Image 1 (cartoon, rainbow, N blue to C red):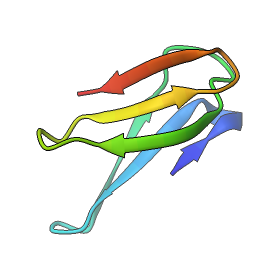
Image 2 (cartoon, one colour):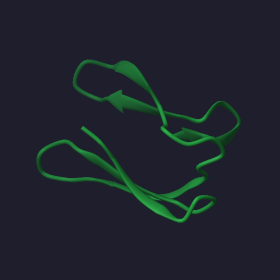
Image 3 (cartoon, rainbow, N blue to C red):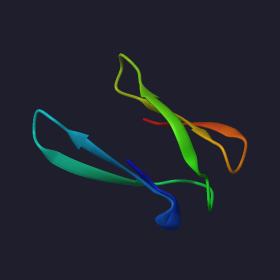
Image 4 (spheres, helix red, strand yellow):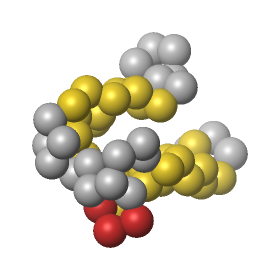
Length: 56
């Protein structure tokens, strides 16, 4: 889940049922598309800033 107003992404680990909050590097990033790869990295497209990002 992404939250544009707080410039953060929240990830839920279904195994542990714990949430992790990550601050994004840019203000008003606007995450619209995201995917988690086989290594657990969270890739996203920041539609408001025109950038591809990753959270490792």
